[in-house]
Image (cartoon, rainbow, N blue to C red):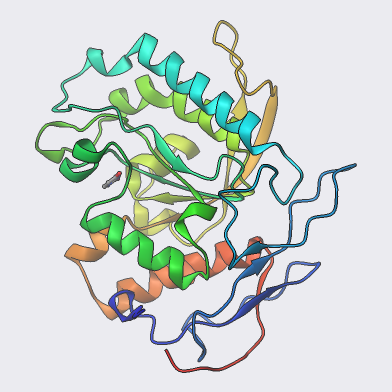
Length: 282
Ligand code: URA
C-alpha cells in the first residue's frame, strides 16, 4: 500500500507500551506500515486483553477494555432509532436519500468526526466512502490501524444540498445524537475533521489554523429531558482537531500534509502508540 498521497513516505512500526511516550518527530521516520498494537483501555475488573491492531477487532464480542461490543452496538442502534424518530434534518434543507449514521467499532478508542455525508455516502449509507473517505482511509492506515478499529461519524447525518457546509444551527440540531454516539463509544481520543465538527464539539468560533494540532476537550453532559441511552452523566474526551480530508484533497501541499500527519501523531501518542524505530521500506 502506498501512503505517499498523504505525504507519508515511511510509517513507523508501533507497539504498545504501558505509558504514554514522547512524541516522535513531526516528519514520519523510516519504517513501513507493518503492525500496530495499542495498549488496551484499562477497565477495573475487566479481563486482561492482549492487543488490538493487526488482527482487527470488529468481529470479537468484547473490546480490549473488556466492554461488550454487542451491547455497545445495541445502544448505538437505539441512538439511531432516536435520531430517526426525531428526524432533526426535517428542520433544514437536505438532499438525501439515506441517513448516514456512523460506522466502525462501537467501543473504539479512536473516533473521527467529519461534517456531513456527500453523494457517495448518501448512496451507500456509510460515512467517508468517497474521495475524502479514501484519503481518511490512508490516514488511518498511516496510523497503523484498520478502519474497522475506529469509529467514524459526522455532525450531520444527511447530505446537504450541493454539499454545503453545515451551518451552526443545523449542527446544533443534530448535536444531541452525535453526543450520545460519542457517549456510547466512549473513545479515548476524538480527531475532529474540519471546522464544523471542531467548533461544535469545542464550542468555539476560532479558526482551523488556531485550533488544529492543539489538544482540547469535549465535555459530555447528559441533558435533562433527553434519552440517556449511554447511561453516563458526564465524561470528557481529549480532542485533536485536524484538517478535513477534503481540504487536503483541494490543498495538497507538503505543508498541509505535514500538519495533518503531525496532528495524527499526537493522537497516536495519546493512545500509547509508540515508534520502535524499526525501519522497512514502504
Ligand atoms: N465528508 C464528510 O465530512 N463526511 C463524510 O461522510 C464524507 C465526506
